Image 1 (spheres, rainbow, N blue to C red):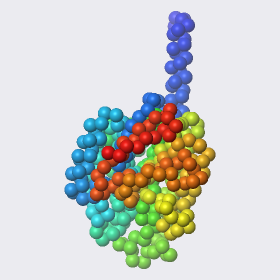
Image 2: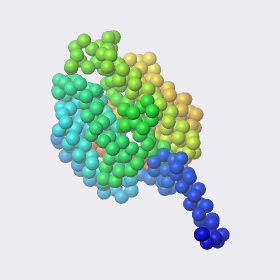
Image 3: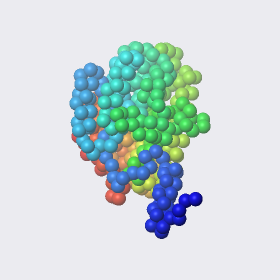
Image 4: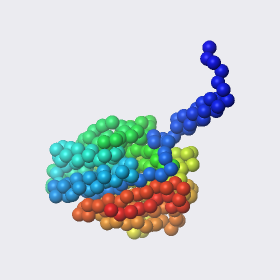
Length: 329
């Protein structure tokens, strides 16, 4: 028989039980500190010379003791570089040098555009399958030297393929990656391997891939905001590769492939009513703006990219009005 607990001991036990119960309902990383900082990069490296520059950049990020993890917005090779196993493995190994954790979302250069002659005329779906086995070989954990647990969409019924879409909590902010790529979100024809493929008469497998991946991204947007509401989060940070062309009208052919995602994001951001960031790469120029008049708390950040081998240091303070602070490096 256990001896009776005194009043102080009972209070400590009760507090620990409450804390553990809260962790059981929080996404991975659900016991955050008061604030955090992370690095945001993308669209690099393109070619051997930039790979050397990226090593220097990684050294700089690794030297910043305040950086807790790194987000890479995709396109880890140039469009004219081959989509070979060897090159993709080399870029994977390079990014694993990151001292902390690496959170990566795929870009079009490493799978969607691999049908092109210069990229090796690969079948994009085969390259996507290889990319998943390389970067997401341990679903539910990040890459990097200090990986941490994440919630993966691949664990959800009906979305088993989408191990690259992940979600985690840091500093009362819900982070989520969305697999959304350039080249019209894969609506650009795979002309390098199929001259008959076109927008008017698309390959069945390409069109099916776009539809299913878009449905997964929409569900994951919902999941991120549902978790944010349930956890009373201070903000939401979403990462994808494609520039969704906020600068164009919704019906423009270059924006239309992303419009369902933007509409869902607008609805969710307005309902959430707290700071939301959509970070992406694609066009290689730093942009920080508020692109949706209806969602005034939404900030869009486009990362630096080739040939600008630079990074953005993002500070998260859940107690500040804007939550996020961006410092180009």
